[in-house]
Image (cartoon, helix red, strand yellow):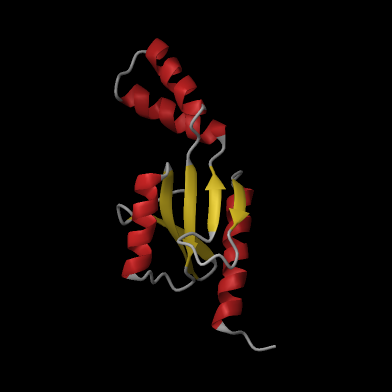
Length: 132
């Protein structure tokens, strides 16, 4: 069967989902929804909290206050909204919709794209590569 752009995109979404699953994320595909995100990924607490602890330590925050902040954040886990584009091209309106959603909901808008055998992730809001 010939490989159409739709099929390539479909398989790339599943590939990205597996990559995130392998890194310990809890993921869900938003197949056929035509929303701004193809995949929603919830960051595991251990990874997320270690990043928060490191950031607070770098700021010189007291351990007691740090633990209170961690407890507060545990009740508000972050979510990553992923748009998969095999070629890495994101339309202006798609980017605007992703950024708008990130201002309404507590999520990080991310573009996933292919560089051969690897997947790169870019924070759409800041246009910088992120390690997910």
